[in-house]
Length: 204
Image (cartoon, rainbow, N blue to C red; front, top):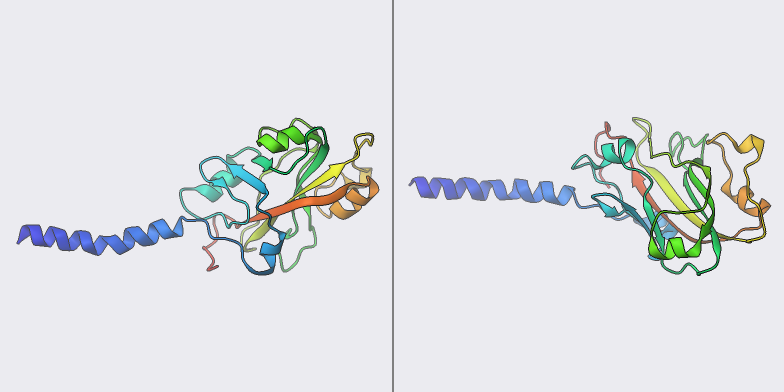
């Protein structure tokens, strides 16, 4: 009788474990947002791995670590050309929220003069940093934010810099920056999504 009771209790727990496990599997970005994604561009954070075209799941403290602990992700572009130079951008088009993006394209990273070899291998970028990496910080109650990665190819003879009015991280125009410096592309893009760690998990 006791063995049967233990067996029944274990069976009852299986759905709970299964649901918890499923909720920790990053869900893919779908619909129009998925059109920004590319299989050629990987964005790797510790523990969770490549988050390209995925929602960061609210388990294992992943979102808290994304916001508070993890350094700049490893960025790998398999089709980068050796000997070429690239510009790597991470920006949030949903600042402060997707429904009210008054500070859109908030700059989370801007690196220029990135050797193609760095992107091919996915090692640390050795280019010139114009904007230090700042982790995603979606405000509470604003839902999922898109964190978009854009890689441009640059002219090796061109010196890239931000204008004085571009020192602010928000209200930035990456297209204007690219046009001013005659960048090619973006040659590849992708994005991932995250929400504030204190927000209730939204159904995707």
